[in-house]
Amino acid sequence: MEAVGVSPCHTTLPRDEEIVFDVGGSSHLVLAAGPSASVDRLLASWRWHGNGPLELIGWTRLPAPAAPAADQLSEVVVADESDAIRLLARRLKSAVVGLRVYVSAPETTVRRAQAVAAAAGLLHDEIGVEIRGARVRRVYCAHCHAVTEQVSTSAGRCGGCERVLVVHHHFSRRHGAHLGFQADAEVHGEVPGRNQGWA
Amino acid sequence: MTPSTIAVRVARTEAIAPGLRALTLVHADGAALPSFAPGGHVVVHLPGAPPRRNSYSLASSPSRTDSYRIVVRLDRAGRGGSRALHEQVTVGDRLAIEAPQSLFAPDRTAARHVLVAGGVGITPFISYAHELMYAGTPFELHWSSRTRDSGALGAELAELCPPGSLRVHSGGRDALLHVLGDDILDRQPLGAHLSVCGPAAMIDDVLGMARRLGWPESRLHSERFALEAGRREPFAVELSRSGLVLDVPVELTLLEALEEAGLDVPYLCRQGICGECRTVVLRGVPDHRDDYLTAGDRSVNSAIMPCVSRCAEGPLVLDL
Image (cartoon, rainbow over all chains, first blue to last red; front, side, top):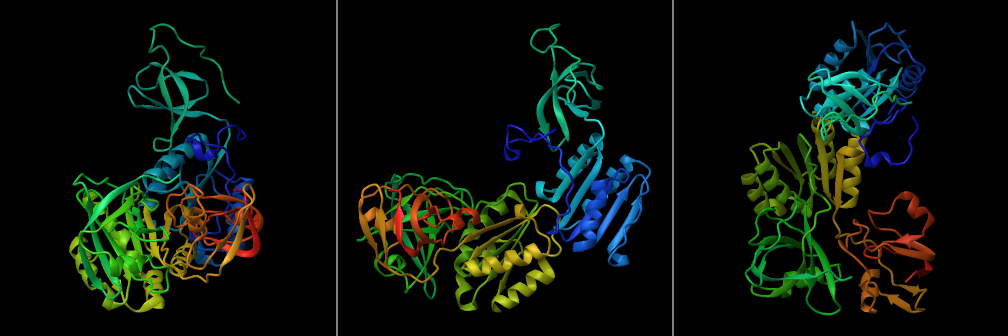
């Protein structure tokens, strides 16, 4: 999805980005769901510029890059993305300003990671994300507050309260989810077309 | 357009240190003064001719509507504004001030604030201290000041701030940077923000150190204290639309010279921060002294902030 229309400064709607190494950071934390070309490029940049330690959290084993010094790189392999998110939250609790976080993963994981990061106080220029795989949305139900994962249509049923929700173009960084509001809230029974996917 | 002003009366004056005078201002008609965001300042219209307007940080609690306090540093090399406020203005005198605004308000999402002040740059942090104490937001305040200057304000701040959160550094630039670099800026928890107020060189030093330690721009904030000497030379400026050619003498800013000539140039802060007085340059190279224009803007020399900037290479022709 390319950036069209609204400037990123004026919207919370997330854009696809490629993760880019920030040489201004003094320590770096990478979450990666397996190897990817951009993770390789990021690690190569870090190796070249070498500013501060880097920790790599993966849930598929990644080939360890040659590090400028052995104690600069640490690697942790976790069982799955939920463990990765939990470990991220733990790391952020004890982190200091200067940390940069990079997440390369499917959309659901990326959004959960962004929500955890926002809760820990990380700002927009301290985290970079890359979404891999199909675009799906996490939808926050305005009525029961449940988050329904993997929604790929413009309206879908809430996993918490079963309401049919219209997925709005409104994204909460705190929840890491789009807003879902009952499709027939105005007139019961009048529901817009459900099965429109998006590119 | 000239902003409307509030008539105030000087209720109290206090010599708080050599060359530092505090003025307490109340509304001349006894009405409430507007409250303001921390870091706020007022533009004071100084008595006398030529008309001068200087900007001063409000060194009082933002929620106090019965009075404001400003702290004026005597600038003997300046154009007489601070001298008037030191030597001519007394209790009972009336002044006109513009409604306060803050271009340096603390980030409300910050979990913690690191505040660094140089000299009289402490003044906006007085309003910060009141607000942050009220909100319960943790902060630490570092003040680089010669001991003889920090007495009365230092005592007041020590009472206001939580124990241990105020540190006065009297060892000059190197001592301050050493402490900040080794003990402070390398260990702030996520969510901390850094705000610096003082002379431009000090701000550059502190922010430069923070950047080297990995601080991103979104956590860095500063307000430059506008009492810089900066070499002043007279220069001529031509107004392309009217054909007028004006001389800008050493003791006037370009903005003041335009105002004296009867032009109504929009302005707000008069410190080169807000962008309101931005004027198009048609010819000539400005001497940019502001904090508003981007590096890109400056390199093409197509605009100037007349409240603080002057002329590097004339003739300077403005689209006015």
